[in-house]
Image (cartoon, rainbow over all chains, first blue to last red; front, side, top):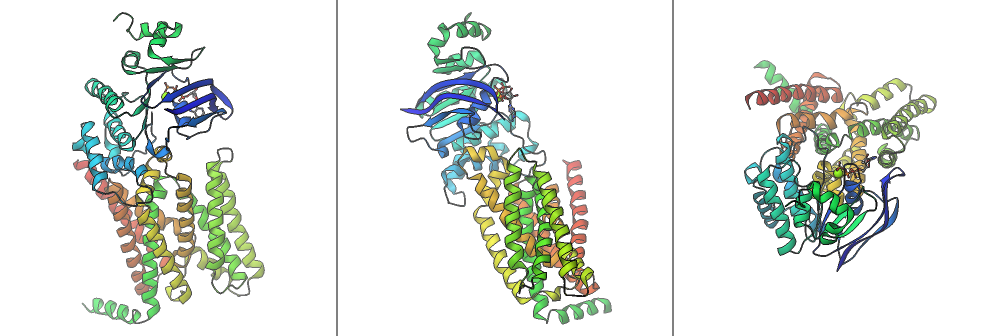
Length: 238
Length: 286
Ligand SMILES: Nc1ncnc2c1ncn2[C@@H]1O[C@H](COP(=O)(O)OP(=O)(O)OP(=O)(O)O)[C@@H](O)[C@H]1O
Ligand SMILES: [Mg+2]
C-alpha cells in the first residue's frame, strides 16, 4: 500500500531551487532514511511533505487513506521564545490534538497517552517543568514525546537523535524500530548517522549528490554513492 | 476612619446608579477578554497588530460619529475587523512587509479620522471629542445602554470562543509548524484571533480610548509571564490581574475623578512593576 508518492518534485525557496528531480514512493511499513550533506534540502523535503511549504514543481500524492491528522512530526529546530510559559505536559498534550477534531478538552485517555510517551522518553519527572527552562536534550525528548502522541500511521523525524545522550540515542533507535516493526508505523527519518541509517532503515534516499539515490538499503550498499558514503559511516569495515 | 467612611459613602452613592454598575461590569468583561487574548498575542509577537488596529478603530469611530449613527460600534466593528483580516493576510505574505502594512493602515486611519472630524463635526468641542476617543471618556457615565449590552454580548461570545479553542490556541501559539503538520487549521484560527482582537479593541474604546488599548492587552500578560511558567497558569493569572486592575482603576477614577482609561493603565503599570520584582526574587531564590 503506497502512502506517499513524490513525482518530479523540485523544492526551494522563493524560486531558488534546492533539490530537483525527486522521485520516490513510501509504502506502508517502510523505514525510509533520508541522508545528504548540510543544506542539501532534507528538512525542506520533510516540510514540503507536511505541506508546510509548497513545492516549486512536481507533486506529492498521498494514498492508503493517509490523513494529515495521522502524522507525527519532529522538527529539526523550533524557534520557541526563551520565556514562553508552557509546561512540558502542555506541550506533549498538544500532540494529541490532531485526533480530537472539534472536541475542545483533553480527556483521561489523552493525558494517559501523554504520560506514557513521557515515560518512554524517560522524562516523566519533568512533566510540570517549564519547557523553555530545560536543556537542549531535554527539550528534544519533550518534542519527541509530542511527536509520538501525534503519530497514528506515519512518523517524520528530522534528526531525532541530535542533542540526545548516547544512552537515549540507542533507546531512541530501538523505540523507532519497535514502532516500525510492531506497530506498523511508517518512518521517514533524516539522519547524519550513516551506521544507524544502514542498520535500521529499509530504504535510503540520498540527496545532495548527483544522481540522487532512492532504493532499498541493499541496493544502496551496492551503489556508487552508497559505497563511497558507507565507508565514512564505518559500516564497510564492520 | 472618617476618611474610610467617606469613601464608602461616596462609592455606595455612586453604585446606586445602574450605569455605574453597568460600567463596572463592562469594564471588567472587556479587560478580561483583552487579557486572555493578550497572552497569545504577546507570545505570537502580534501585539503590534493590536496597536495598529486601535488606530483603525479611532478612524472608524470618527467617521461613525460624523455620520451620526445610533451607535458608533455598528460601523467601527466591521471596519476594524476588515482591517484585521487585511493586516493578517499581508503579514503572512512575505513579499509585503507586515509591519510596514500596519504602519500605513494605522497612521492612515488616524489621520483620516482626525481630518474627517475636523471638517464635518457638528459639535463645537472637536478637541474634546478627539481626546475622548483617544484616551477614553473622562466619565464612565457616558456609556450608552446599547454600548453596555453590545459589550456584554460580545464579551460572552469572545469568552466562549476562547474557552472552546483554548487548547488549539495554545498549540498554534507554541509551535505553528507542528500545528499545521498535525492538521490544525492554523490560518483559520489566526483569522479568528485577529477578528476577536478587532472586536475587543472596538469595545475597549469606550473604556480606555484607542491609544491606551494596547496596554490592556499587553500589560497583564507580561506581568503574569514574569511569575508563571505554564500557559494555563499564565493565562489565568493574566485574567485575574486584568480584572482586578480594571475594577480598581474604575473605582479609583470614580473616587478621585480621574480619567478612567489612564487610571486603569497606571494600575496595570504598578502591577507590572510588582510582578517584575516577584519574578526577579523568584529567579534569585531558585
Ligand atoms: N526559510 C528559508 N528561506 C530560504 N532559504 C532556505 C530556508 N530554509 C532553508 N533554506 C535553504 O535551503 C537549503 C536547504 O535547507 P535544508 O534546511 O532543507 O537543509 P538540510 O538538508 O536539512 O540541512 P541540515 O543537514 O543542515 O539540516 C539551504 O541551502 C538553505 O540555505
Ligand atoms: Mg535539516
